[in-house]
Image 1 (cartoon, one colour):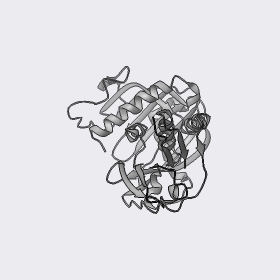
Image 2: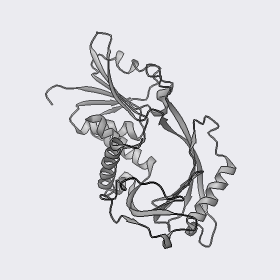
Image 3: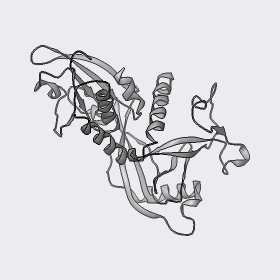
Length: 302
């Protein structure tokens, strides 16, 4: 790269940190960390391939696991299951092997992600390679480059905050409240998922700990405190799905979690716009939000 290009990335979640690290690895000399369609399939295949490679390194927080993915009512699959040809050991589970009341299921090898550990690994890699992290409050997207006329590109990875971030103010972005429970159950080695019309239940191991979930409460701005009734419902659903959780003793609960996932009515926004800085220089603003897929960080670089 003949010309040095200076980049600011706004947001330090999975998408923001991953985007910053990939920019760095693709030769940008200064980087500061400030829908069901074919496009999404492409992103998710990139996601899976990258996670598979990273799972060889235990420091990343990724581990390879077997997954049993059940759907209560047999879905209309269209032409085929799009990912069956690249995940290892894919098979459709015979009807006689399915849990009671379940009409469809598949199993395969995938990757489980310990998000806090993965984020720390990304940040450590980013800083070790010579870039900077800045903890500041931005009230407007222009503040990410107006104070520094050398900035050429700003990548907007603000997630659910894109709804209220001045200069973006995207009212198609909204939060989905999710409640989970972290338990200690090192004997659980496989992922179990059950989807039906009313709930989404999952048991996901991550190195001795296991995440139990969950909920998906769209456009929910209610309390960040865990709801006890919801927690009890999650435990009951998860134990029914994976009876091995309790074996001969009670669950060892580590903590209850509540988070808000960013969703966007119009789907993922990966879009470029040009804004003039204080010296009338063009600054590229690349919006990269409305999703939770690692693969979109790669698409953003392209």
